[in-house]
Image 1 (spheres, rainbow, N blue to C red):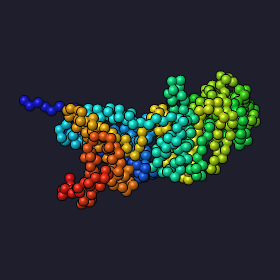
Image 2 (image 1 turned 90 degrees about the horizontal axis):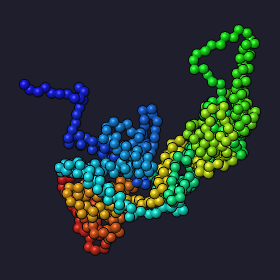
Image 3 (image 1 turned 45 degrees about the horizontal axis):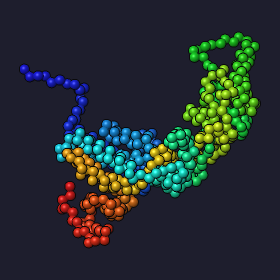
Image 4 (image 1 turned 180 degrees about the horizontal axis):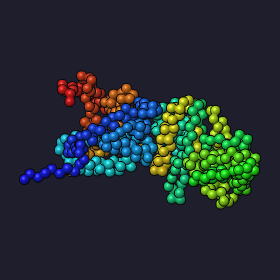
Length: 511
């Protein structure tokens, strides 16, 4: 009697396994990597993304592009996770991470077709990764908070290619100053940077050069009543997470009023209760109140009469920053307010910024509080500058924490390829194949940036390789460029000055 089939999947489910599953996953990941490849480099192309609601985002930031893409394939989602992790840890290099992952998968597919087992490929890549980390440690350049010029160059590199090149020097200077202002040095000499201490506020209108650093906190709100003081010096700051208004009953309740006198008594009692709440605030000695919830109209009148600067509906994130900057505690009960709960600010001032009002809290108790006000012609311009500046802030912060940097332009990748080729020769077994395949780094990163500038990969590779090739025993064949698919004949001059190489003829049949 034949055995009956056992179904463990839901009816209609499709199962893919073996080489087909590997091929599908690799193809999906490569498609995502190719989508952002053209954005790589200082002259990378921007992408225009339109979501289902019609909102438009114009950027060449890899993390933003991948975040806005509606991806369903699980293999492609892993590339997105790679970019998100890179963005969370470093802040920049998301496109590089995605393209690198796609390239490794492409090389792995070639090995799979050659019969190499996936675990062997993974083991070889892991060996190459460990060795590459050791190599990078030998080619790093030290970076210290005193080396402002190097840090500004680093910030400028992160900003380049994001639509802010015309003002990258100004933005780089803002980024370095802001990061250095919040950097803290421990007793053992280790530097820690919390980028969350830097508040970035953007406002369309004006020039990018009008962007500035404010030593304090900027709140995108205005005072609740126009008769309140516009400027408060030596401010005693009170932060409230409870409303300055009457509590409403949680259940439905009815009050029956039969005479006009009862109606007047009800209103008088309500006014007296609000007056009692405001008196509790006034007795603390505070002259500036930031409330996370609402402030009743009658309470606004009493606060104005007492000469108190009041603001309502302040965001939770702004309340936390104000608490760190002024030293004030966020109060959750008006009955337990003490004078020690108040914070201090040298100046609280409301200013007009491009037709709208913003509040500036400066001269704070904590000198680490820093804000950046970004200006730009349009909303899209300001959003692009904000993304570029955030990348620069995070990159400079990581550089100060590690106190090490490497040069860019594809130079470290070529050096890794040279040194990894020597390392691969010392390995035995099939892991050597995976390590050798990782040597495509030498052409991976210079190539896209060269294409976006209209240059040829072979010419640029020959220009940047000789200085490194002189100090290593790697043969010249390492730098032999791929044959062109458009030219029938390529003649390359020998950079060393000896007899030129022979012309290379491409095969008649292109694969």
